[in-house]
Length: 472
Image (tube, rainbow, N blue to C red; front, side):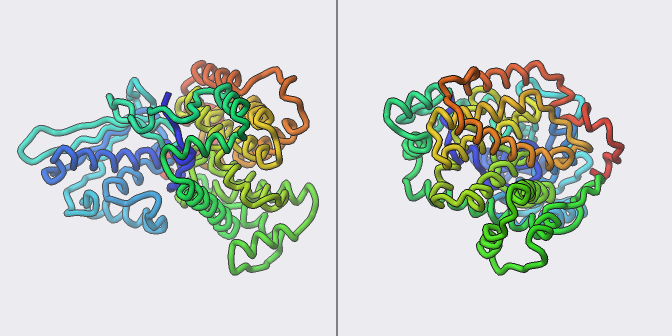
């Protein structure tokens, strides 16, 4: 199977969707890079993008059109100014011209050059898109890409990436593999992961990348907890995290994130207050995500609030070794990779169990590791969390990553904490279900699930709320 890094599971990007925003954005960048490799870039007269399946059905609400235009324009989701994304798209549409990779502009007519094909689903994956470059003095050049979940992108007919398919010191395809490495070598889960990460980058690079992920998560929570207003789209969803934050801390102002965190740690209030904070943290991230803010895919954008909420819970209320943040993220990332290998991270393939369910399992495992759990308890916590998300559908109202997506992150976070507590109080030798078994069950459930419950907005809650889709 593919060798997957922690930093493949956790990616810094722009909301609202890893499958429908980040993936297509990366696909657009890859298409231009491929045209350069083939010596075609300077001959491009026009580019057409065709979106298929789930990308076409909910692409407007998920910002797929914005993503491909920004990718073709040379913007990068890690470094771009998120406040300028919509103005830049508006400028492209108004001028009917686009600057490929920031170079000389070519004609671009959105009505004919960005086509949504909701009735056509490509065979390989529901999230398919085709780029066609019309060339000076030659036949058009077309390439098809698939956004397969969590920001991962594959090109049609692409051979496996040799760097990622190579053997690692401690290769892991299943939870049983991971547990065997822990037992045989006397290692914790994050220690196993560190040994594998060393095949790609130095320890200093690993630590720096983990620190950047955590800083991005914290900054996202902070912004979400201090931003009022209404989310974009026809639903008119009102932000709630800032109100909860204010209700817990009053009208205090803070000069920095750390000053705010210290105020939370000192606030007290017992179980009810802690529960409200976890809810607040998760809402904050996914309100930012829905507003096209910068988030960390964990393992998807729609589920980006669960891991930060649980990690913030640990940081603010458990207050053990701060270095445990690294162990949390390494553990959570490895659990996410197991689900990607054995099932899917794509809601278009597996419903919301592939997003919130996986993120809850990741967070449960990371918290259990940080609270002193054994490798067996870490995997038991992940299994428990997923077990109680099996069959969860993806039915976004209006194709927006808002209802029920934002609230589901709060539920995933609370389930993760509960799963951790159960695992820490249990003997894994008595467990009836293994992590590998629940991963297999999740995949079988995904295969059996009706397509209308897989990120199409054609079933479930999406049919119960009247919304003008043209405004989404």
